[in-house]
Image (cartoon, rainbow, N blue to C red; front, side, top):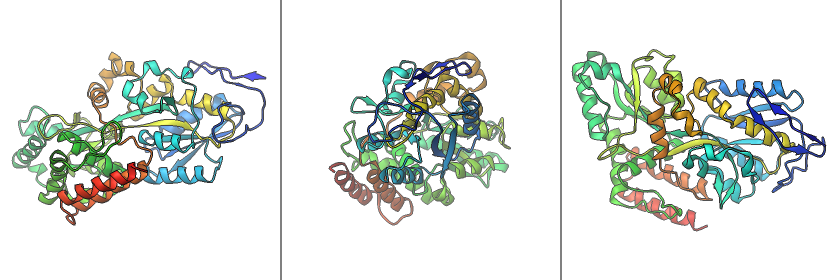
Length: 424
């Protein structure tokens, strides 16, 4: 029998023990966490380039237990599809999975991932909403690796020239600010006002939910019961559709995912952009460096609500070398690694103290805004049939944005679709 060693570089005591040197059972539902050796980490492609560096640090310390980074597509829907295909064939190709926070319930309910030992992760140091995303029926089925809250990126240089001293807190203020900037700043006349992620993929579900929540509506309640056919939800969807129709949101935004929006903002094509915090460090290396800031998302009558984003680490039920996998999950989700991802990729950490550290706040002034975004964020539907739910949302929301269906009819149809999906 041999026990895992002390990771001095990360400050982590890795205490999992292994009674054998083989690959482990790889059986679904296994909680023995046995087996040591090479493993894989399946996650979406990292535009920041930090993930390979963190994995390389692990591999230097564990030459006999190396991690291979399997880069999945950048869009969340394709990532989820490939992970499900892997699980349905009971393949051990993926060991540790980087799950969007809304997939935990689905993967746990289908027994595609193992329940984790809570006492081996510092959950008490993490933001409570973040920890909740890793739970299913009272058990811990994932380790919070990063959180996410939507932010409004805006061009401070253009607003200053127009005499606007504060970012908008409502949708109407944002459109008015945009009009004032275009009127007073010649360089802004060709710019569009606002963009988000409106392509028909998971980003549209996020943007739709944020619009609905920011108008006082809900998609589902805390128990997963749909309640989206309401006047409040209609106001949120009508804001997006009306903005596309009148040009406040450029029609190109109907093809935008996160990276498309980031590039448009950095190229000076849009004045306001909804995106995640990962964009901050990249934009600081672009032509708009020093010319932008972030604020909470605007809403109908005041500050809006973000959808709660982020990624958790889960252990495939069919994987081998689970002792190594558990140790790697501790390493990758540690406060030390979270600090690295914050500094080098501006990813939102799960650890509460990092948002209040003066040296970090001084260097990353968006942290207080981001913390509030996360604490007040509204989770997307926590349902087992999440794939059916998000597909229905994307279908109906996109129909309204492209003008092929009214918001009233779309929300009526969506309510019916969600009731069917959640009744399964």
